[in-house]
Structure formats: C-alpha cells, structure tokens
Amino acid sequence: MIDARAHVTLPEGRYKTNPAAILGIAVHHSVSGDSLGPGASEAAELAHIKAIDAFHVSQNFGGFGYHLATFASGRLYQC
Image 1 (cartoon, rainbow, N blue to C red):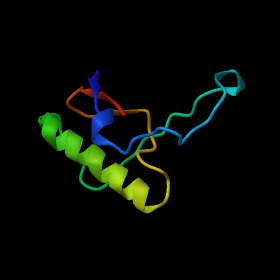
Image 2: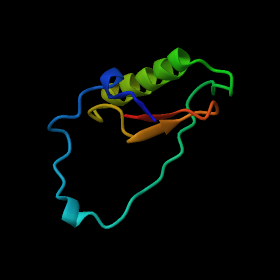
Image 3: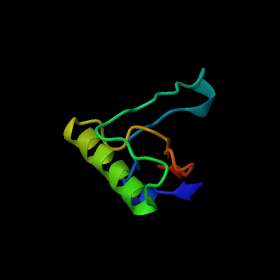
Image 4: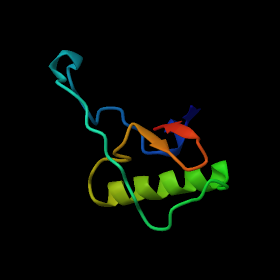
C-alpha cells in the first residue's frame, strides 16, 4: 500500500467520529474521466488522486472523499 496522504487535502479536523458509533462501512466505486490502464505510472495515478481531491474541495467536500484508491496497475493508495 502506498501512502498518498501527502498528496491530498489534510484531513485534520474534518471528521469527528466516535469509532464506537460506527455501524458499518460503505464501499464506493468512482469512475471519473479517462480511466488509467494497468500500465499507468505511479505519477499518473497520484495525479488522478490529486484531480479527484481538487474536485472534492471545489464542491466543499473538505478534500478527497475516500480512504483508499486502487488502480488497474494493482497499486493501492491510502488517502
């Protein structure tokens, strides 16, 4: 797993959730723009993560809205 947190908006103070209050999880599949194929570089994938982050910020979502991002290359990013 690749730590991509330095590439997205800092989450400090965004979500104040008591872990004991969590009842479950939701898995969301995002398809945005041109998808990257299995031969994509790590740099291209990070640029894609940054683009999603910028869109989420522009929508007042507070930053990248996902905990993880994965690509056809098999790389998994913690966001």
